Image (cartoon, protein in one colour):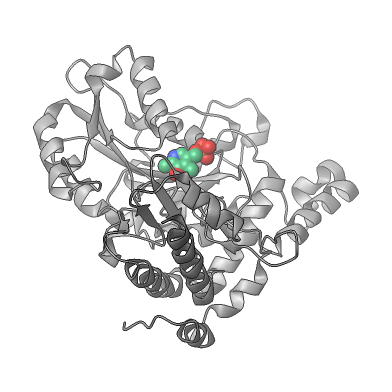
Length: 424
Ligand SMILES: *Cc1c(COP(=O)(O)O)cnc(C)c1O
């Protein structure tokens, strides 16, 4: 794609954009004077679909009018409610419907998965994780290690980038996996790193982990709804994600979990259980011994929060219409445009730490402004940009194909450029 550095070029791309109409289906946050912000933070909290309010209202109405009968007679009965989301969710992450369930929240799901897939013994007890993993993931892994009576100092193996580099090299991941070999119980990585935006080849990593007899799971918080994930074919054992970043399900919204079908009927796999994982036919008899649903749903514990789930469903219906393939096509073009513009500011001023290869990244670029401090970020914020700052020197921006335009990207570039010029 050949880009041009002009607002008219940006507007031309918008005019040709087959997904352009989706922008109006979202509430765009506004400044005090009513001008919309340039919102480039959908990797942190996705925007609110205009359809979400009606979806919540429906459940409030049914609760108001039907009380407990809503479990059976609501427009969307609450008893099987989570099932309404499954096929759309499965398409977003590339899995079979039996392998996917919307439940709990992200870190909680990470723990539930580790209960099943991290079962250390005196020989095999190590977890491989990224050195710059999202803190919650690291806390979860460390506490699981301690839960089993081991010491994170011995058992948590951190993948570090080479000196002078920011992103991990995949061949180094292989080396570490092979070096720990039979001592390795689990490889657990963010499939898209939250800080650098680097996207890992899940199939490759899964093969390396399985070759040494370890399980492998991915935290897809920054992948789900961003990159078509193909979880089933990746071969990984499990994956978890949140739905409030690229998936627009609202602050603290529910998470998702994937477990490869080969584990669904494994009686040796321990699991924390609750009544929502029990056979639906006999669930309400309340007397039977636990009889797991023969899918990932066996990992469900509680009857789910319908209001929170309604918000996930409202968003998934938009993804059904837009389609991950079309979103990915636009994301590559839109992110490429941003990269082209930012790089035009000059290597001596700017350094994008996200991989330049579109296959190795999603919609996020992490931009280092050399010899700058947080004041650059504060200046662009005042000028109407919502992005995100990560210490010590990185501005993360995510042009989201569902609701961001090429014009958004261009305006961001102009604001960043003038902030840099004024700082010097
Ligand atoms: C956003 C994010 C989280 C947040 O976890 P919650 O349990 O949803 O609060 C955790 N891990 C990663 C990798 C994330 O990107």
